Image (tube, rainbow, N blue to C red; front, side):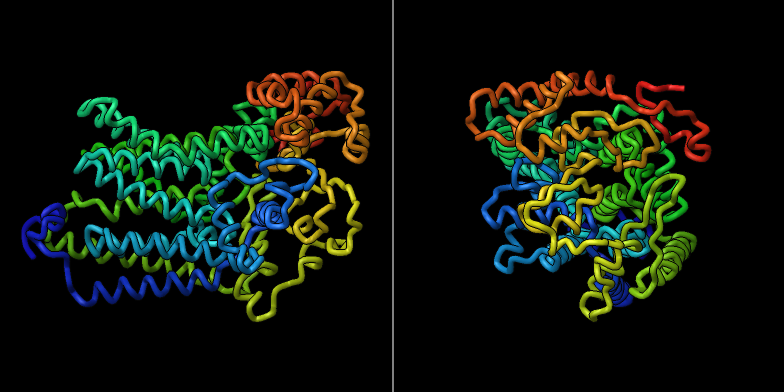
Length: 560
């Protein structure tokens, strides 16, 4: 082929896609390799079992509750939770069900890329990047919502491209529906698509009357509106309790931002392909002449800034894998990429693909089910979650019977299945242990992920690790939880617990409950919790206690 190959001509069938057999064989080999890699690396994270316990209680008639005595949203992924509860219900099983659902979502994503790729070269490059990315491989399973976000994000890219070329009322409705589904899969996942979505809405409204566009907008937004109203009414909060626990810490923005940049540096060292590829694809999008592509790049940049501003995460790659898949989807379906067929460009493509193939080969040892590579970097608090949990929850090891028993893996001194049904105990690790414990066992989470009262308070002064912000609580609180009677002595804490219990424990139509919900969601309850916290007594600290992590110590009201 000579001259310039313009991919929009390909789309109009003026120039067919390359049908060379070697490219097709390469694509299918990469897909088979990806399937093999998924089977060898599939695992389930400890955090997934938090959602599993809620679903299990839902199946047994307790409602969407983690502790059966209160309604608390302990999951950040409502749509994922609903799909898991549907898929697993016929079997009353969640380990294999979560992996099957993850595999289906990843397969759906690959099928969409295969069917809509603008050229075989673009698809090959995209598949090679995914295969060489630890983040993508690690979180293509895990029992968390990432695979569903891969699928919805790819669909959103395709819909944005289609809307840009052929704006219709139904197209705007589909865009809004996908945004709505992304929102109830994970609230902050819509950040990437807000710029291109607003562009489509504004351009559509300027071309048609507002009345004609209102109906598809409202219909598409129904899932998000419906879940939000349900969440406020049932759980008493618009925001998941896990978000309260991780964002309502009292830690300064400068410390969180520094930790966010540390997260990117650590990921660059641990998984250089993911962050480098994501940066290159984002830069390509930002300099593109295509409005939608440019706005997707802007959304990616906004999302990266947001991740840094909240201190990022403690799992290597979890937040980056979704961004990478979406940017690869945008690359693969870009019909405006053109190739000049010269000897230099020909060999340049082969060199680039060969480089990605070498990076993929370097990734293959990490797929070995017998390799334990999990560790926590003490300095920055980040962990290779798959490496840490794979020996106990890896699919391949579970199938062949070599998985380490959970009691040995976590050094549990007590078998959770033999606990007293009436036990009440503080527990900082609220994944597998509570899931295996009796339904009536009540656990108090010092990290506040499942505790709405503690989540209203800032973390206790001391060393902090992202995603693990420990709260302080008194013996009076334990007595209150055990007796079911508010016995807190501090007047502000007493009012906070009263509001929280009205929202999460009282009957749905109890008198005063709506007022408590209003105060919680407007921040009034939080202010009372912070006032109470200012009166807590802690030992005064100095940076000398934390010589290596002094940049990640929060002193609260006791600054040196």
